[in-house]
Length: 367
Image (cartoon, rainbow, N blue to C red; front, side, top):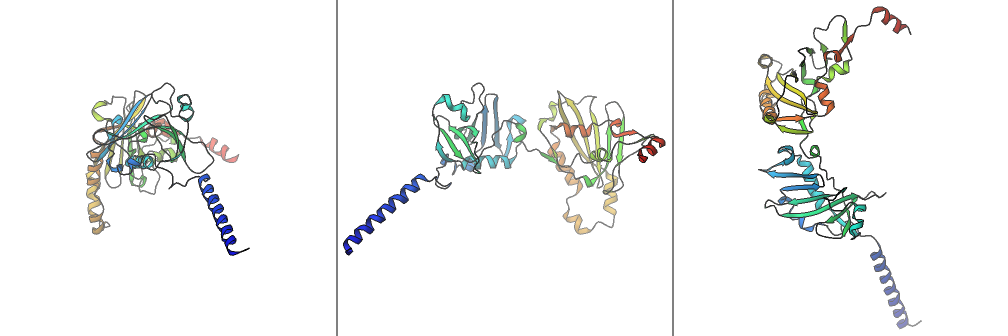
């Protein structure tokens, strides 16, 4: 074979290889970076979002930025969970188109991208707005994609478009208020709690106390024919203020506690006193807080030589803590879970039981 024919053959081979490579690339799915952003306009407007509006056939939920703080309108302007807000906006920004799906309205419900206001709709209308009230993006959020793939995906339809899309990414869009408010309210750790006093609505009262943070709580003035129901139940009353979360909040003037309320006082070793009113109103568990200080305990701690001077200058004072807690809680009544509420309203008989006669103890121990 002469050199001219060899060059022609080589050129043809390269051309065939090139066509094969191009054809293969066209058939292969595009990578995440190659896929088109669903909302490219949001990339430069992330910091301009001041309102998140979610709508469905049951109503709407609005989360707004006011004076540099995010609030939930439907929770009486209670502070919103900023991490949730930030995550949602960034998730919307990063959505990328995988493929086009149906543009037939009769098939929208299969993907969950039907009109959110229609009967039996499962979709949500999501709008991100700027401070002028203008929509930055508006989209109908549908069902997540069912797939064995680890790549997350969901269906959506941009408002005003007939075209449903499969997109890469995820969105946790919900109308549940508790998912948007700042749920973490208090975290006064268990080891700080010294005493708990519960005044029940029937006039009875019970006091729990312990000598130090390592000890279990005991019932003060326990009748001789009674014993604690269980150490777990007794000690749980000292943990109410630890990692306390809420479900909703109401302006304090809008709630009136009655004589049916239970009043719980929790005191710490360092002099913080929390007074908690709790009552079930309209089938919901309402609690309100007031924080004060035990001056005698504080004076005693301030005179103890075991407190180092450098600790006094670096550790926030109890007075400062109380001021911050009152500022945070004074204007609100909180809705809490049944679990949290039931911890506060245990009756005296729930905390103790009859002491077994000696013969019963001997009999049970011999089995």
